[in-house]
Length: 182
Image (cartoon, rainbow, N blue to C red; front, side):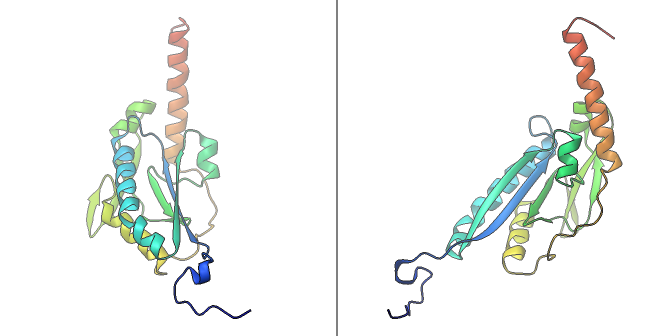
């Protein structure tokens, strides 16, 4: 049997396996929080913008959207700030910056800070599509941050406050529904 000398990725009819690009979108809420809603929309637009090019280049993009609804999920996903986008395990935000998020504060009944994205020296409450596209392409073409760092994880105080306050608020709402005001 002779070896194939085709120059295409589909040598003699045998398709080559696609290389994976795994994108994780981790968030506290997409029903009320504008930051999370806008981040999800930017992510969807960014992935749609690069999907054809990545497919032709031999990559398969998978997006996981994970609602970090509990302290346990936050710990399992090593969640640091909402919202978070990771490409192949690497957070696309170079530095962690946060500011008061009134939407998440309303959800839990306390003050909560959420992520602020920095791109070209400007701060945004949701990442510009270009920031996400560039992060995906950095991962594909090897100029990413490398393997995800596995530093010791502890739930950030800000998220601890969110989950504690949300549990307290949810319990109070359940009591009201049951006809047992506090």
